[in-house]
Image 1: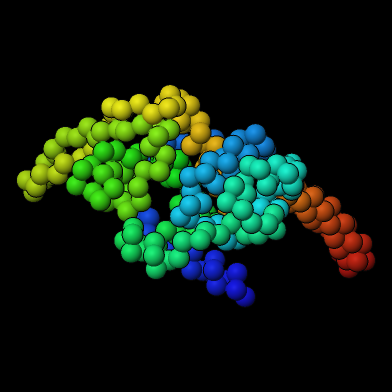
Image 2: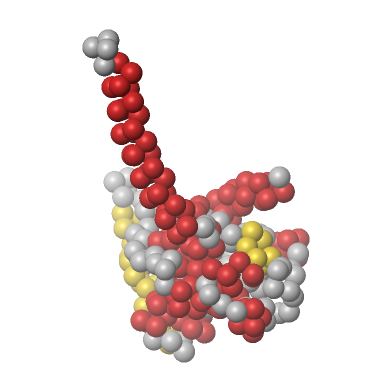
Length: 246
């Protein structure tokens, strides 16, 4: 019952806390839950950069180790950098009231964020921060205007500036729109390497939102096969029962 309440709350939080700009073209990313190397790198990035503020309370470290073919020692060394036990859930120390005071809103739990927003949205969002001195953290986001979240991956990506133009609608109202983002201060990664890192991170978050997806899809094939065979047997049985009548 407790987990059901958490899921219901989480499905609402991202809607309110991560509402993005409308009519934004989203970049497509390839999700591959069979790529264990990508998932492991994404898990490490998640722990290093996301888990400081965002929890993933529906996931346990032990489950990650089991699914990603990691030993207990590897999970401890790579993911439990802040301490804790391998059977713990991915929670954070920061309290919601404190985070709301610092960021203006409490960072949502990321357990099911991809189910709400989609992988393409998150992939585009994490690559769309740009410099904006009018914002408290000095950055804004082309996908989520007036974002409350700082650009935690700026050391990897660097800093971008927005390229804009003024457009006039039919009523003569002028609106400044973002037409592109330009890298003005390189990070420690090349743009291609950063895109790959974000892809790994989002790939892990897709896994995080439904850890049993591959097992579900594999089982689904057997279920459909059984139903197909059952349909044939049922049809033949029906013909046998009704042959004297027809």
